[in-house]
Image (cartoon, rainbow, N blue to C red):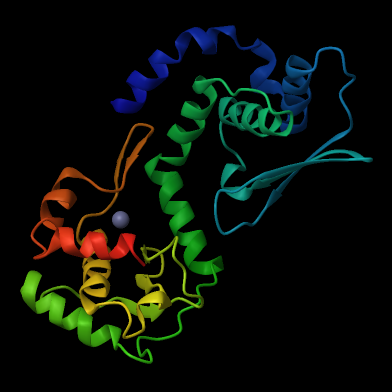
Length: 249
Ligand SMILES: [Zn+2]
């Protein structure tokens, strides 16, 4: 239902589309969008290639040979309006032009489609190379901490995912739950005596909540920290103290 309403909201833009849209090849769509953005420039040779990426990333490059677009193969066979939206996004980025919200919205709607998400999930499982260094650190054993939290907050009922320390001591990515590999990765920055264990426990607890409360996909929205998630997170004792510790890492 959501999708129907969203596409109705897009109707004025859709009606403005050239009727040729559905008969164009991806390269022709890129050429047309190029012409819209740079009406005085003759469109270069354009090559659109679908690549087996592990995610939905796409890239665009202008070389002497022309425009080279590499699109994640999750977009192969996507409806023409989606290809058009992606063309606007990539060419807009290339030429540093503002990208109309209708296009980013349409692009996200497609990636949020259940069948597309399922395909990407499978693709990540097969292609994604996840570095998991194992749960045993120099100072902390992630499985022990997991089981302690599991007993305290989840009645010991949460199935244990893969647990591992990150390769580097990242400050920007303190923890990460990867549903495709059912793995929780914790930044090595916590594997020390210098940082109170409370901070590590809080980060692992947060990632465990991601396992418990999956991402909410509605329309073009993607809500990672749902209301239930936020409520559950507050059950962690010394919640504020833990968050303060993270600020001072
Ligand atoms: Zn989170």
